Amino acid sequence: MMGSMLVVARKELHSLFNSAVAYIVITLFLGLTSVWFFSVHQFLARDVASLRGYFGLVPLLFVVLLPALTMRAWAEETSSGTLELLLTLPFSETQLVAGKFLGTLSLVAVMLLLTIPVPLTVLPLGFFEIGEIAGQYAGTLLLATAGLAVGQFVSACSRNQISAFLLSALALLLFSSIHVVNAVLLLPRGIAGLLNHLSFSYHYQSFERGLIDTRGVAYYLLVTALFLYLNTKVLVLRKWR
Image (cartoon, rainbow, N blue to C red; front, side, top):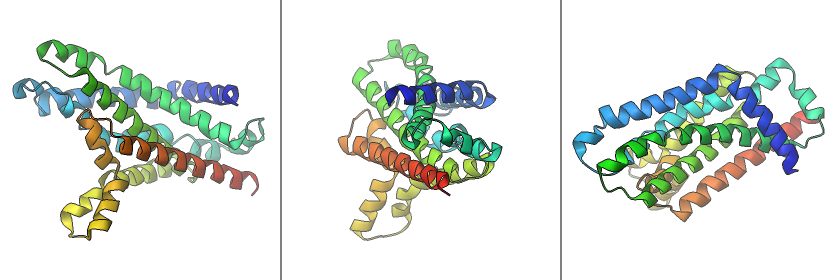
C-alpha cells in the first residue's frame, strides 16, 4: 500500500513542479514573509529575539496559497476527463487520496525548508530559543496538513480549478477566522469555546509562541484525517455513479 501511495505522491509532486503554480506559491511565500518580518514588523527595530512576527503571517498567507496548490488536485482530473481513467487504475481510492496529499505536503515541506536562511540570518543577533523555533515550524507544518486536506476535499467536489480555488479559500478563511466572532458578539461560554476550538488560527497561536500544544496537534491531525476520509468517499461515489 505504501509503495502505491509513494508512486501517486511522486507523480503529484512532479506535476506540481512542472507547472508555474508551485514556483509562484514558493516565491510569494518566501517573499511576503520576509518583507513582512523585516520591513513591516520591523524585527531589527524591535530588538526582540523571537520569530513570532515571521510566523504570525502564515495563517493568512495559507488561506490563499494552499488553495492554489490543491485546486488542481481533483478538479483538473474532472475537467479534463481523466478522473474516470484514474479510478480504473490498480490503486484504491485511499491510496490515490493519500498519495496526492503526500505529494502536495512534500512541496510545502520544501517551501518551509527554503525559509531556514531567515532564522540562520538572525540567530547571531540575539539569544533565540531553538526549541521555540522548532515548535513554530512544527505548528506551521501541522497547519498546512489540515489546510491541504480541506483544499483537496473541496477540489474533489468541484468541476473546475477556479471554483475549487475560490471555495477552498473561503473554507480556509472561515476555519481561520471563526474565533473572531467571539470578539464581536457576546456568546455563551460553551459556544465561544467551541468556536475557538474550531479555529485554525486559535490553535496556531500556541505554536506561534513556540509551544507544542498536544490539543492543537490532535486538532490538526483530526481535521486532516476527517477531510481526507471525506475526499475518499467523494471518489467512491463518483466511481459508482
